[in-house]
Image (cartoon, rainbow over the protein chains, first blue to last red):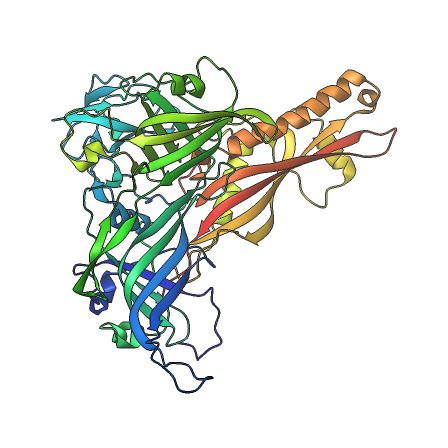
Length: 422
Length: 176
């Protein structure tokens, strides 16, 4: 490290790894850690160690008991661009995992990396054959570049051999030989027992720490529609931490040098498409519903984890377990759009208790796009609001198990919330 | 070393403005032309502004730290550029006293803003130059237009409009 402190807080490195054994130092394989491109100035962490007062009786009125050192724990917070991968999973090309994909997989548990193909003849806007359907799966996304060179992503409803069927139509029909892009898709699974380990390093030679036995504390999305970069704010919690000098990989913790972020393609947030369509209806329109011209958009995932304790655990923790708060959906959010109609609107969606697919695609280029899917959402409350002096409607929604994919046999098929990178 | 691809960005913006480039929301290739630069006399610029194909010039007016920049330890950094497009329209002497002529020129100058905005704000238009060179330009957002009438009464005057954009680009600093 270039000398001792004082050093700049904003020059730092953060690397993450999926633990194979809960809370066990994996830095002996530091080369397998993934560098995280977090936003400058947003990375903060705490290194906690409990101290407990035994409260034994004292004989001097101004004395105080010596406290006993307890167990360690840590927290880590940072913002990271809601990135694409930069790799278009086109014909015979596999989708790849980005640094953000690694974090989504750890937090939610599920990941499917598909492989693209090409379209056979005979496609409609909803269904057709691929040259090879083996790289696609229901519950993932399918991409296609239309005649205007706009990249469209749509949710896959079913894959039967080479026949692909969408939940929602493309704007047109892929022609014979057109590339069909697959996706890197992330979704919650039952009983995700993954844990994450971070190495956080500053410029000073001893400003380096390993945070072990981690899992998600919270995840929030910032989805600006004004050209800024969409971001994901993460908070992680850990059961243990050690200084770098005490880690298995201490010999590798040499001077801080620039690193390569793999599969990292930051994109801006003003170009995409929001689609809201009834489950089971495939009709698409680029100007009217299901296209929604939103002025604001939010998705609020809720995947709380609690520690499973054990005397033989790491600082008393055996593993993390995703829990469920009664009456709290895994995914909720809101859409704000200008007031256009009452009878065909989120008001009527609410009153008719319609099951609606919410599909938000950001990015219009293959390999530089992503989509958020709430496959079956119920709208309500719905309110008339003032949005920047535009007469508007704000509609809240809550997501449920995917009600549009039939023969759901895997967690991916049933997931109430998915993120696709295409 | 992977600096911001400013040369490719400038090339692409000129292609979008002057060559009708872009897969979608392209600007008509007969709307704008180059040939506007510092050092030209007012008289010369006034003559250029009469042409059906309007003179324009794109400048990178500022390079700024992006508010969402990343830590510098990586091989990717997010950059912000302020970009201006200058367009000149000439208002001939006779037109200066003709309401319809003045209105038409005002309207066209304002229309320029939306024409350019639609082409620039469509991210797929920005990805590569016509020759296929990557720009690493992720997006552009219109910030506003300023119109001003320049010249002396009794002579042809110029309506100069500066269209301002904020651009998000990526640089790729070396790691070795």
